[in-house]
Image 1 (tube, rainbow over the protein chains, first blue to last red):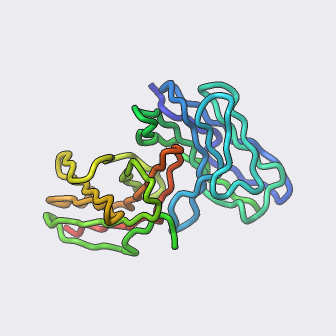
Image 2 (cartoon, rainbow over the protein chains, first blue to last red):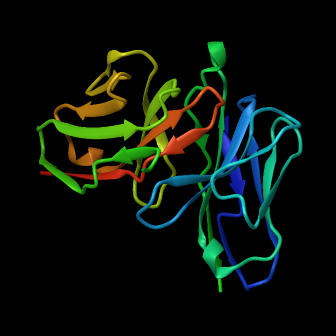
Amino acid sequence: NAGVTQTPKFQVLKTGQSMTLQCAQDMNHNSMYWYRQDPGMGLRLIYYSASEGTTDKGEVPNGYNVSRLNKREFSLRLESAAPSQTSVYFCASSESGGSRIVLGAFFGQGTRLTVV
Amino acid sequence: QKEVEQNSGPLSVPEGAIASLNCTYSDRGSQSFFWYRQYSGKSPELIMFIYSNGDKEDGRFTAQLNKASQYVSLLIRDSQPSDSATYLCAVNTNAGKSTFGDGTTLTVKP
């Protein structure tokens, strides 16, 4: 049982390049999330998907797009990378409990992205 | 005002002491509350969740929730050096989105 798997673990991009971060979970969770974490800060939500086929913007969506390919996979795309997008990116998944109370999230190991 | 605020830290306690981590939130519609532990260079790991007012205990960890005061805390009893990490408070609304605080870094000194 791998949990949440992200690829790649490290990436260096030049300004203006594009790339897609991949995320897959094997826990049959409905909800998936992309966060970024900058030094000394908490996690900021980029996009989330409450269920297969739906996506919604989070706190910091500008410069990113997402695709919920199926229940397992949720990808994050940077169309034109900027130095301000240098960060650690975490994918997470969670299941909803009764009364739509969302249970705690399980996180992938993170992608350390540097844009030069 | 930030949606979720935590002790600015860092917090340092001696081994064996009680560490107290605090978190306040602004959205009165929040329904579920979580504490995550994050070791340096690692991903967050869920350690406690609480939905109802009062205390919830799990081993050396106790989460406390007071919805009227919009306050949630985490107590770590008999703190160990292995508890040294950043602790993140997260709050979920009924819409299912988690909002995180900036974290409090705890150091337990032997």
